[in-house]
Structure formats: C-alpha cells, structure tokens
Amino acid sequence: MNAIESLMERRGAFDYILLETTGLADPGNIAPLFWVDEGLGSTIYLDGIVTLVDARNILRNLDERPPKDNKDEDKSGPLLTTAHLQISHADVIVINKSDLVTTQQIQDVTERIKAINGLARVHITQHSRLPQLNGLVLDLHAYDNVGSLDTGDVGYSHLDPVGKHVLVADCLS
Image (tube, rainbow, N blue to C red; front, side):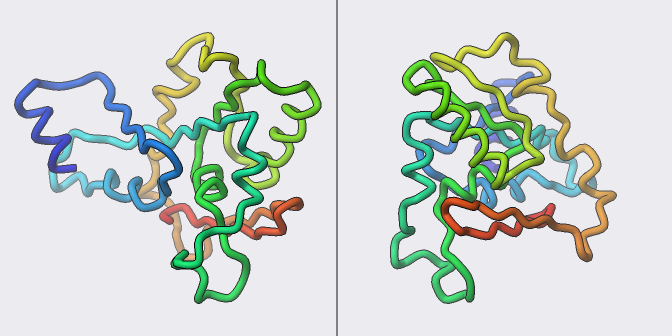
C-alpha cells in the first residue's frame, strides 16, 4: 500500500491500478490491505478481485496436493491448493485459452469453478480477449458496501466435488 500511495504522490492520480499477483498467489492475503478506513484518507480503493484461469491446466492445479508446509495442514479438514483460494476469492473469473481445449473440457472447467465459487461472474476468452474491460474486469464495485456487512455469521461454503475440498470463505477473509 505504501509503495502504491508513494507512486501516486509522485506521478499523480491513476484511473486504475491493476495489481497482478503473478503465478499462484493467495488474494486473501492481499485484499485486506486495500480495505482502508475512510478516516485514514487513502485514495486507493479495492474494486474487485479478478482471477485468470488457464483452461488447459486448471483442473490439474485443483487436483494437486498442497506442499507439506501449507499452513492449513495443522487444521482439521482438507488442504486447499492456491488455485482453490484464488477461485474462492474471485469476484470475476476469466477462463482463458479456451481455444486449446475441447467444448467438453470448457464445460468441465466451468462446472468445477462454479462448484467452488458460484457467486463469481465467469467469462470465457481466447487469447485473453474480452469484448470490453469496464463492467467485466473494471468498475466492479465489489466492495463498495463492505463496511456495512454484518460479519458475525457471514460466509458461504462450497464443495469441490472432484477434489473433495470444502471451501469456507467469509466476506473479510
């Protein structure tokens, strides 16, 4: 956050800042950094979390066993791959490389993703081409009312029927 705010001070305001968490990063560790109290005066605002999925490899990524040093290992229940975490936190999921797989494989990928996160909007692309950015991956306003959420028992669970993983994500995880 400090680096982004410093960049904004030196270069002026930006219309958008897209933070790309290269590879398989857990957005759950990054997103809370952008939930800044209005009293702190930050001009940075989390618009939404977009996850790009490789149609050709995502099912393999979901089926991989997480490394032994996974912090969830000590908890009861199944271990989650980073691919599961990325999908479960997403507001929008872009399934890319659809031209490299069959129609049946796209259907399998879509069903698996929706089983993990049925709330996210899903877009299927070839060569990462979207018909427009606004409203699809920009201007999502996914967290505009996060301050008014009742976080007591808020959450949802999804069952990944193939990987047998149960994902529980609350609105502030």
